[in-house]
Image (cartoon, rainbow, N blue to C red; front, side, top):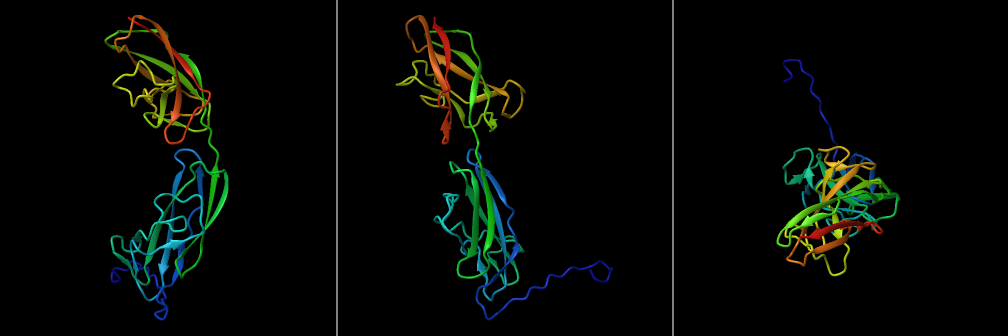
Length: 267
């Protein structure tokens, strides 16, 4: 390598064999921006160099911080994020030896947390420098308005028919097609039109189409999406009926006050 004249770069690391465990900051983690609605998660990457006498075991060496509301279920507890994830100098090694760099991946969540700036600081347990991290949390708004509802459809007593409604995204977050935003039965006790194709007894289905931009994978603020609802006859008596439906983002929130009426006739 040297004979052909190509340059060689050497990294010289001074370690102290008299100190069992010591670290220096290899690279400061980038500030993170999160929202308090989906996806509301991000991962901080913290890299420290081992400048002590002992190696660090991947999967065992831990960081600590003051209790933070941004911790997740992946943390050991509210002050201890997941353990050392890898040897960044030599990926795949089970230990980070003196002179090498270890990497911790710290998951954070702002789900339902107040908007604002959160100042975090991480430090290896019992040694090493404090590593500051700035996290900014912004509010998101889930809101919608009905732009169109399907005309009344004929539903066979022993069959089914598909109705639909179209909704404009008036909030600040994109709705993924086929994601966690679902239509919701508002009738107390459930819907008499429940079909075997429904997600559950109270969830007819998810967002199926971007009407504004067909083929798009999400419905962005200002755009219109369509929800299809399969209505089953379930051998009910012939006659006209109607039902109200709402919207809910699973594991987050429903759209309070939103409702749309679908009319149909059992034939």
